[in-house]
Amino acid sequence: MAYDLVIFGNFTKDTIVSAAGTRQVDGGGFNYGAHVAAMMGLRTATVTRLAREDERVVTALRTLGIDTFPTYTPRSTHMRLYYPSSNPDERILTVTQDAGAFTPEQFEGIEARTYVANASIRGEVGLDVILALKRKGGRVVIDAQGFVRTVSSDGTLHFDEWPGREEILPHIDILKTDNVESKALTGRGDIRAAAREIAGWGPREIVLTHRDGILVYAEGRYHEAPWRPAKLVGRSGRGDTCIASYAARRLSAPPEDAVVWAAAVTSLKMEAEGPIKRPLADVEAMIRRDYAPAA
Image (tube, rainbow, N blue to C red; front, side):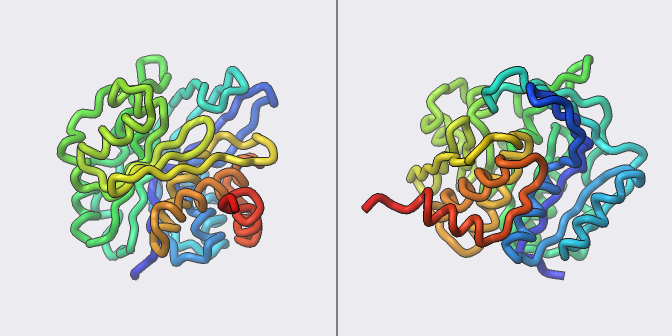
């Protein structure tokens, strides 16, 4: 079957620890992204890996009208996200177990205009999957976190070199990264310079999130939009929501429009824990109110 958007990644059982307390949240980039696509009314499918005991996530997505193709594994990915300060970019991530790697066979019979890979750690999505999707002819979107995050001996996630990036990146249409990852990759603290350098490695568009908003580098031009949440409650899933909303909007709009759309959707998501559950009208109203061009 043909879809507008196919979003995939391992489900993660998230334990979020911050000054507000400790919460358990059903996470995973595919989960956050699927809620965006459902809100936008797109023909959407998700492909995921998770333990049978977490099948409620599959049921919930199907209830939203999203075709979901799970592979049941001995265990789900478990992640702990600790926010030691009010800075949303400062966090410590720990993984105690994971659901393993995707295979090209999981995408047999699935066609889409855009494929979004929302992996959490290195090893979840390999070159074999990227090439299999590219052969299908759709746009391929990846998040750098799934290729530069590695798990240390104590379970803590850290950023590492990206082996094989020269093989993967020329096949990528849109690459999402954040300011921490982009600095680790390029050594550049200037996000514009970092985005331009990463684009030189092959991706056609760069979507870079940071504390204040989104920077997009596409076709030699920069486009920016700030976050404008009324309150900051749900930091986790910010990047996942951003890249899904940007990729979804790019199906019908240019980068300068998609960056504003993604900023508004993500801002509304950050006002609550978990995936976005706001109506489309709220996004449109926010754009008119908070992102209207200056007269």
